[in-house]
Length: 328
Image 1 (spheres, rainbow, N blue to C red):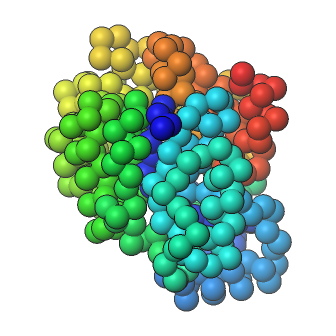
Image 2: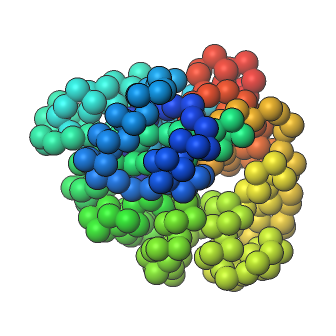
């Protein structure tokens, strides 16, 4: 039976990416740089508006934690991903995509009818990404999608913070956390998005009160969670509630606290064209480095290098060739 470096739980989405300008975002009434949850009718209207003037740049399997699991696998780690897709062609695409990436999942041929979740990512010339997500069937991710045996044989659990917006998804994440704690599996949580923290802060606080060994967040998310207005203040507050944490600060790099020592890693200079998935790839590289026995400082350096490589090209994932040539 396989054992895993990381067991992830999160949304299953197929990403479609477009290049737009700020005027389009104003026309579509979308807040720039933010992820907005939409319904299927809104998704169809947005696609019609986009395709009137723009062409899709890329379509790929996605979902925040799914992207994280893929890069861990690309780096040589072993991963399992719990998620939910429908028995439609989009779901078939997603299942094959993860299988080809070497990610084990709970997904099989027998899946529920419905619509697989889709994410539309719009990238402006300043490399900022604005996303709309139609969750579809992934909104009903539940404890039934968990594999307790695989989770119990994992070194770390990684929880996607977006699950706080789904009643059943949140319950699944809480149950996964409980299984991990009972099985002595380290628990990692990512806050995922400032809007999620702003609207579901109590849910995040519940995760943390129950026990989070490693917290991933960006500076804006950290400020919303802690109520502090500075990076030093955020770090001081997080030290009181989390065993270890990482705060990413974009081009200013990131700080990491290993429970004893706080270190800072500088970002790798690059020409950013698309920030989609930067946090996902950062977390994956960081987790893989820790699983390989490296220090937080070493993991922080690899994570910054990985995120810098990702934002220098379009798309939320790296190719295996890019990983082999630049990160291994």
